[in-house]
Image (cartoon, rainbow, N blue to C red; front, top):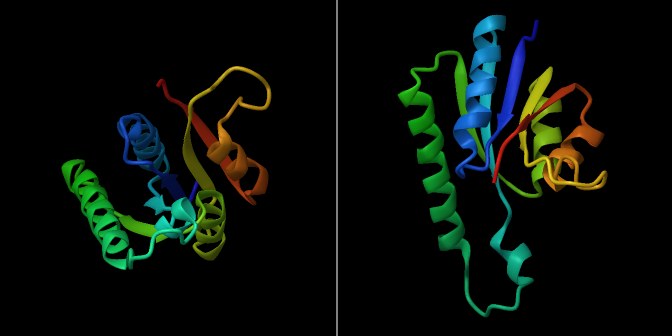
Length: 142
């Protein structure tokens, strides 16, 4: 049985598949569920090459993601559940959140690409190899 499950969501088309698995586990364990979404800083993508302040755009992304997580939570009438949007590298932020919040299971989506190196996908693979708790990689289709 788990006490605290963390589900990391990309808020794409696979979100429902991954969230449904985490919610089912939460209900069996009667535990806390944390839903998170990680946004990589816009400056990572552009390397500071754009001569403008991207802070407002970044804030809009965070606000939209927060609203989407709350909609998911409310539409499923989830109790004992919190939502967080974090900014940074996905693997690092997931590990940090899990350690800081005593998470004992991390649920992530995995595309199951072919080949040993691509087995879990880069984010799921990074989460698995650095986690100090159990990790469930939910198979999702592209």
